[in-house]
Image 1 (cartoon, rainbow, N blue to C red):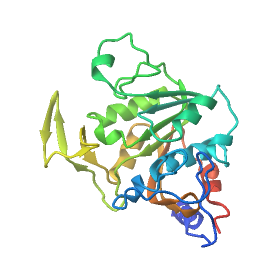
Image 2: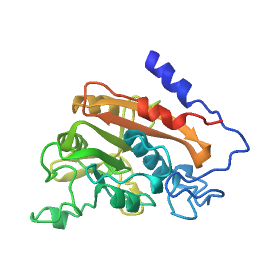
Image 3: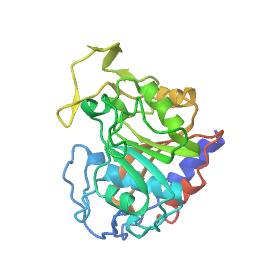
Image 4: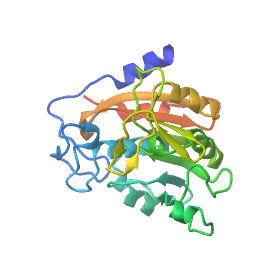
Length: 264
C-alpha cells in the first residue's frame, strides 16, 4: 500500500500550460502530429524522428533504467550495455544501435526453425538461442499478445537477462480487469478461436488482452514486477501503461521516479 501511494504521488499530473513539448528521443521541440486520434497511444508522432507516444514511452523508461535523463540522442555510448528487443520500431532503435550493443530482432519461423541463423537479427522469444545472462535489458513493445506460449516467452526472457536485468513490457493491458481475456486458446499446433479473430497491423494475430493476472504470471516466471499508469505532456505522451519486471528479489523504482521530477 505504501509503494502504491508513493507511485501515485510521483506520477500525479503537474504540468504547466506554458511548457513546450519536446521529443525525449531526438530532442525536437514544438508540435507533434496527431495522426491517430482514436488511439492516442499510437499517435502524437514526432515530425523529426517519427516516434509515436508508445515508442517515446519505451525510450523514456530505458533512460530511467540507465540513469539517462536527457533526450536519447544525447545519451553517452556504452557498448558494454547489451539490450534485446523483438520488433523495435520508431525513432529510438537507431540510437540504441549507435550507443549500445542492441539486438533488434524479428520473428520469422522459416528462419528460426532451421538453425544457424543470425541471432542479432532473428529470434523466437519462446526459444531464444542466447546463453544465460546475456542481456542487461529486454524491451517488448506490443509483442507478447502475439506470442502463442507467453509463459515460455517470459521464462526465456528471464533466463537471458543478467542478474538484476530489467524487462520493460508494453502490451494491451487493463489494470482494472482481474483476468486476461483470451481471444485464442492454444492446443499444441492448433489455434482455437474463442472470439472473432483480431489482428494488429492487419496480419498479426492477437491471442489475448492482458489483465492484472499478468503481474502474477511475471512473478511465477521469477520476476519482481510492477505497473505504472502515467501521462507526461511535456513529451506529448498521453496516459498509458508500462510494466517493469526485474530479475531480482525486489523492484527498484528510484531511477524511474526521477523521470517525473520537475513536471510543472
